[in-house]
Length: 439
Image (cartoon, rainbow, N blue to C red; front, side, top):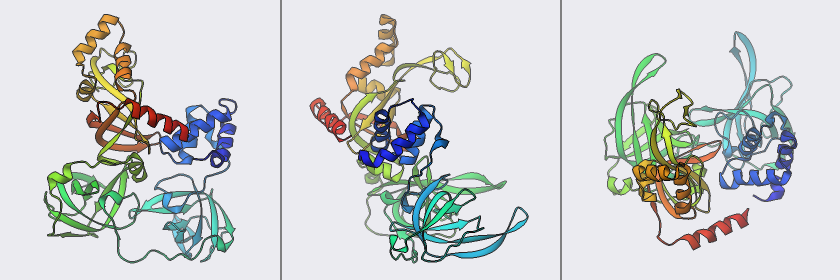
């Protein structure tokens, strides 16, 4: 992102941090979180301030986003939108009668429902363009709902700011598996069922049977949960209409119940074996979705992170020990293990990858016993981490696994990994120079 666009946010972070970082250092950190780790600017700002011990409450200016960029359960969102409808009604809340205003908002990206819970002095009319600061979001029927609470600030803008917008109507949005995003509203998607199995869950104290599995097409795979028994069978091709998309740690998941229509279809479609093979994806594409299951990415290992190498694990919970201490069970006599924690970059984005013992032994061509022997000879566990640095840094690799997202970016627990080509250092160095030059 261009520096001038970040300048107001750099100034805000500087005020929150005091003299802990220079503005140049803040700008570098902010660009890294936004451009490399693909965080939104509000999340990147909060992460930086938290990391360096500043006061995030010192932020005074929000970051306006398009409505389509809003996600469920965000505590603070700022945007400009047109009021598409404004209805008022009286409700009972905590034993008291109160008036609310509800309807739809829109911009050029999407329309969303809204509810204003505090209406004193608030006048909203169809056609108003409003600048909103301090709203919050919730999820309702699989889509984002915007809420105006007692901390919101609403200012009317020039109506010409946003042109004519129609409220979204009509049938569910038709999408491929690869296009599914959280809070899309009702969707229609077609795919082959790769797996399905029943399980028992407890809802409001009552046992209920749901059906979970994986649906796939040529664009990707998605986990699904069916809250009604549609008699789904592994291998069938189905069309699901009026499903909704939620997310778990950023990974889109398809959910449908008795409101949905599930049709079994007979047409030419890739077989299960073809669909099981994970297609190569760009990291930026996965970041835009929020995550993915069973995804394959190819890039350059830019860094072998701390925590890699020969480690000791707690025998009770298998967590890595820090100086012989488990954060759950205290001081423990651990058992040895190998792992790699690396940053993989494909030029469009980066993902933090964790490889377990088996894949680690494969990539470094060294067994756990051999690594233990080297550490004993040098009387230093770090010798294994140093060896990994030499063998892996600037190597191109292809890894497969589920990718999740949190405030720190994308992360993957790899289930497959291999070097992409035997001779890639020159290409990797060229890519690294290009990446640094683009910052």
